Length: 238
Figure 1 (tube, rainbow, N blue to C red):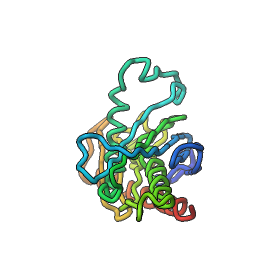
Figure 2: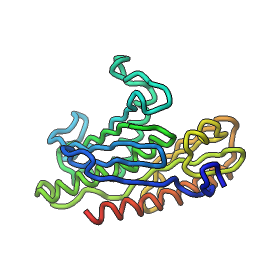
Figure 3: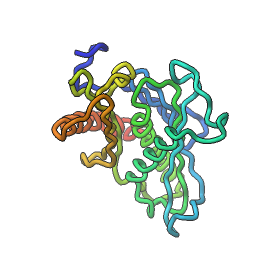
Figure 4: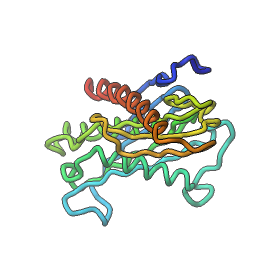
């Protein structure tokens, strides 16, 4: 058992609140334990110049509120540039969500997913992917309901979760108390087929073996299956 009472392969409590923001085409407050991320989807009838004619685009922006963590952080706008961490995370979110969408079926429109961390306690990037997908799916559902699309362009459900090695024990879904002293940290994004979209694995305190990597991926696969089941439950009843 871990300090919070969970088993090594158990997710933190997950709470998903849809329609959290009135004006966004899709919005979700994603809570994973004490991590809380607001994900909002916005639709625009234009695409960036690099997008092929007839196709759409999905992108993401990520930021943390100044008091999302234990000490106040400066806003990116105050530093006059996006922090390298925020830039790296929002690229991960964008890549992950584009893997869920048939961009040709989306048409010449852009869906932007804004992920704002209200409270951070580990796993903010994976919570952003999981909640961001729900916001994206809700926005696509609205486009179909409004007659702007004949069918939803969503191809796959997508979720993300973290795993790590703490005190030589592989564990799933690390809060900050575990993440801050993890020997190995790994984030994994997968679709509902169990296929991997992205892996980010780092030896923080020591190197790790291929066998240990497989153990962590097995934990992530279990966690992502459970998160995707929750996504289906939420999206299916709307």
